[in-house]
Structures are given as structure tokens and as C-alpha cells.
Length: 74
Length: 333
Image (cartoon, rainbow over all chains, first blue to last red; front, top):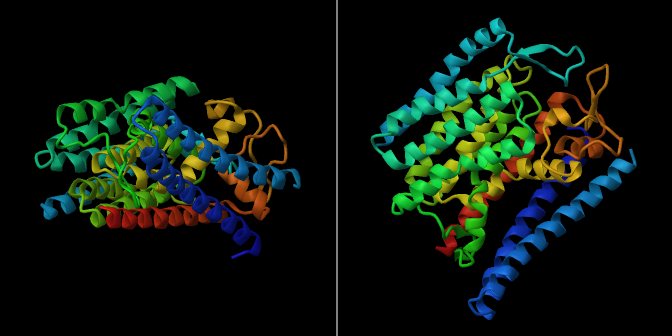
């Protein structure tokens, strides 16, 4: 396999693994922290959804930044 | 029971294998052809091959209808609505949002079956790795309308190279099959075997260099099938993980073009085909971000076949992560 192709593959495998870890982490944060320490209320739901959205945004924009920087160098 | 399941999978395989040449003949004679834009000679290729995949799934599933009437009829209805959306899009060229809306409607059979037969189709509290049953269930109900729309549109958006749809979705269904075995989900095994059989029968015709394109009908039906089988079998988390390359590609496109837009309305292409057949990432800042453009930005010029291999390996890695998720689920139950 070409070295350059391996480079692309490793970057994307790490991106997917990072996404998976973020999914597990966000679930743990919501289920173990928010659901245990905040009483049953609308605030709890909003906070929970907020955590999911925030971690998705962190994952997406950090990866997007790296991709755009690489494209600018083309 | 397993004998019937294996027979149904073989029927799916044989149906799509023998129906695809008929579809190729029909499409060629009626002028239903598309241009293979990733080859320098830009050959014309018959489309609508996805009809054979859809019919393969339907014929295989019909055999299992008496055994699992509720689950299989829900699966079939969802697949048919997905296929019809794609079929209409192949002829009428729907714009982004109406297409998304119709695929949201495709999740209605799941809602209705879940409401009427809660013991057979369990909605509401999915099991997630490490933690067991989800407690913040509002997120489930918010995402359920997208359970068919996301996989069907995401599969459609990544279907840009020869063989990518049957290869990636074949790996996804094989992974969901193993997850079903790990988690002891009988219906999951049954439905994923039907989908896998149909995709394997179609692969010889769609693999590089393609003799037929799936058309939107194929990608929407297969995406809907993956979504439906995951919800029916309680493999929601595994579905998201196994479709990560598709979802990542869809997110990149939607957020970089500023909304859900029809592929044909995007003027600046994300990749450029050089006269020698090599593909390169377009450096134009107006071009949308895609998975393929990312691959090419990091790797430099590649042939179409090399890009297909990279996408296949990414899908295989997602399947590994999905199986790991299933194993982590077992420890939490």
C-alpha cells in the first residue's frame, strides 16, 4: 500500500475511533452524572441533550478544522 | 426455523443475482443510463440496479412472513417506502428537503407497529454499551423519526463509486448479523441475513468496473433496511457505529454546503478526474467537504479502485467498533 494512502487511512480510522469514544463518553456523562445528580425535571433533559450536541459539535469541528487546513495546503 | 431463514437468505441472493441482468437489459433498452463520472472515458452505465436488490429482499422476506408476521411486515413496509422514495427521485429528481421528509415518513410503520405490538417491537429504552438500558429516553424519541431518514440518505450520499453501496452495506449487515448473534436477537439474525443475501447477489454486477448503477432506489431501500432491522432488533447503537463513514460523509456535505441540497445542484465538484484517470481533491474553497475529498487531501492522487479500497477498510474498522459495542453491551446486561 502506498505510504500516502496509509496516512489517509490512519487519519480516518482515528477520526472514526474518536467519534466512537465521544459517543460512549457522552452517554456516560449523561447517564452517570446528569441522571444521578439532577432530579427528574425538564432541566435534566435539556442538559442531557445539550451534552450530546456539545460533544458532537466538538468532534465535528475539531476534525473539520484538520481537514480544511490540509485542503488549504493543496 | 434456521433452515427457513437460510433458505430465505439464499432466495434473496439468487433473486438479486438473476434479476440484475434483466434490469440491466431493461434499463439499457429504455435509455435509463447514467454517466460514470469518475472514469476519464465517461462511459454510460445502466441504472436502476437497486430494483433487483429491493426485490431480492422482498422475495426473501416473504418466506419469513408467516414466522414473524409483525416484524417482517414492518421491515418490508419500511423498505418499500424507502425504495419508492428513491424510485421517484430517479425520475422526478426531488430536492433535498422533500426527500428528507418522505424518508421521515418511512419510519411511520415502526412507530405504528411499536405502539400496536409493544411486545414484538420494543421502542423507547435501547441498551447502550457499558451502561445498559438508557435512562434519558427523550433523546430516543427525538431521534426515532430520523431512524430511517439518516441511514437511507447517508447511504445514498456515499454511493459515489462503483461497488461502494453493496460492499459497505454488506459489511454493515454482516456486522449487524454477528451483533445479533452476540446479543441473542433472533429477528436481527433473520433480517440481516436477508439483506446480506440480496447485497451479495448484486455485488458482482456493481463492483468496479460497474456494469450497472444502483440508482437512488437501491441506496434508499438498503439504507431503510439497515435502519428498520436495527430498530426492530434493538441494535440502534450498533447501527450508528457501523454507519459512521456514511454519517461522517453526510455531516461533512450538509454542513459545508449549508443544508440538505440535491447532489446535482452542487456546482463545484469535490474531486477532479485527471485525464490519466487519477482522482485528486479539488482545492477550490467553494467545493463541498466529503469523505472522498478528505481521503484524497491526505493521500494525494489515487485511482478510483484505491479510493474504493480505503472506503472498504474504513467500513471494516467501523464494523470492528460496532462489534466491540455489542460485546460491551453484553457485559452491561
